[in-house]
Each structure stands twice: as C-alpha cells, then as structure tokens.
Amino acid sequence: MVISPKILVFDHEDRMVEFMVRKWEEIGKKAIAEKGYFTVALSGGKTPVRFYQKLAGWDGRPFWHRTHLFLVDERFLSFDDQDSNYGMLRETLFEKIPIPGGNIHPIPAEKGSLEISAEEYERDLKMFFKLSKGQHPVFDLILLGVGEEGHTASLFPGSEALSERIHSVAAFRLDESRHHRITLTLPVINHGEHVIFFVRGKNKAPILRKIINREDLSLPASMVQPKSGNLLFLIDREASSQLSL
Ligand code: 6PG
Image 1 (cartoon, helix red, strand yellow):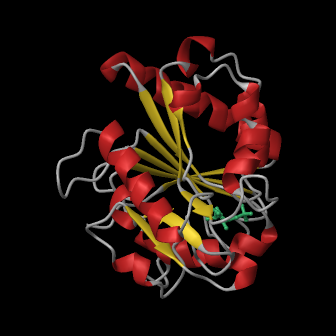
Image 2 (cartoon, protein in one colour):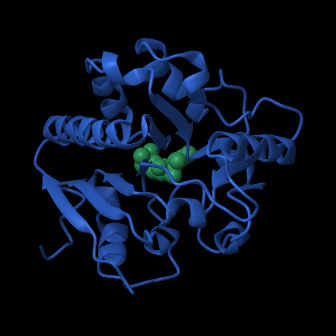
C-alpha cells in the first residue's frame, strides 16, 4: 500500500525552521510522556543546518536528558573534516545544548575500518533499542534530505545497500569526492514513527516532482514508505515549483 505523504510548503526558510522546531517538540513531548525517552536520527548535508542552529536555541532543558540523538549516515572521515556529518552536527547543535554525552550516538567513523565502524554502530543500535535478532530500531523521528539524483541518507540510486533487509546499518565505498559511507538502511527508515524530509531550493524541484508524483520508484527517496509511521515533506516554494499542489 503506497502511503501519500503530507506536504507543507513554506515561503521562507525561517518559517520552515520554526515549524520543524515545533514539530520536534510535539513529537518529543509525546515520546517522553509515553515511554520516557525520545529517539531521533539526524541527516547531514546543508539543508538542515539552519534548523539545527535554531534547535540549539530552543529551551529544551526538560527534554535533552531524555533525548537520544543518532545519525542517519556518515562519511568515513575524521570528525574534524569539513565534510563530516558528526562534525557539522557537533558545531551546529551538539556543543550548544545541555545534552548528556552518552545521549549522542555518533557513527564511529574514526575507527579502524569502514566495516568495523558499521558493525560498531549496529551494535550500539541493538544495545540501545534492546533489539532481538532480525529486529530493526524504531526511531520516533527521522530527518532526511534528498540529493538531486534522488539519494537519501547515504542510499544512492542503484546501490546494493538499497536491498539490505537484515542489517540496520550498511557500509560501502564511493568515489573519493563523495567519500566512503555508512548509512541506516531502508528497513530502519521505514520503521520510523515520523519520517520528515527537509527539502529546499530550485535545484531539488525536478527530483521532488519525481518523488511526490512517484514517477520513478527506483529512486531511494521514493522507497521511503514508512510501514506505520507518518511521512511529511517540509519544502520551500522553490523546491515545490514543479509540483501541482
Ligand atoms: C549526507 C546526507 C544526505 C543529504 C542529501 C541532501 O550525508 O549527505 O545525509 O542524504 O541529506 O545529500 O544534502 P543537502 O541538504 O546538502 O542538499
């Protein structure tokens, strides 16, 4: 059954970011009320930076110690590298909020090998979410972006990682410019309670049209079909310019 996503279009990035902070608070409050903690998987890239900066200023004091932040994907680089997702999140958010260090779960991309890092991250997920064999973590919130060619997380078109159904984490080598990658797999993303795409800019209008209109189901972003969770697209006017809404 194909679920139709909810789509919200914003004229200004500030409004989009403010909405996302309120959404974060709403989802977080409910998760903490229901089970005592809130789990989020965060994407890298440029689009969510303003949101992370805004979130850093949010007075979430009662929540941060009950919030656990994971990464959707990572480039296999030093955290000090300018292309590191953890490095960007550390600078824009993690260093600015009163969250216990143990509540931040980086993908250990500085360890020995790509495969060891992926295994360690999968172990962290299994332990934290108390998973039995074959189970995948269920995040309260997963924040995703979209690449111009339809990738999301570090799941690229035609990638073998797209067919991974057993492991929650996949690792693979890309070309030098895109770095080697470690990523959550589709089963994890599609188990998310709230999966939110954050898309801005005219350059994303063509791919967004293909995703929303389901023109090409082989696109990784088109394969995001939460089993029981909500799917929401937060987009700006430019990115929506090829949609007939
Ligand atoms: C990454 C991200 C990736 C990102 C898209 C969009 O590590 O690059 O997780 O999936 O969300 O590439 O990136 P922009 O927001 O920079 O366009």
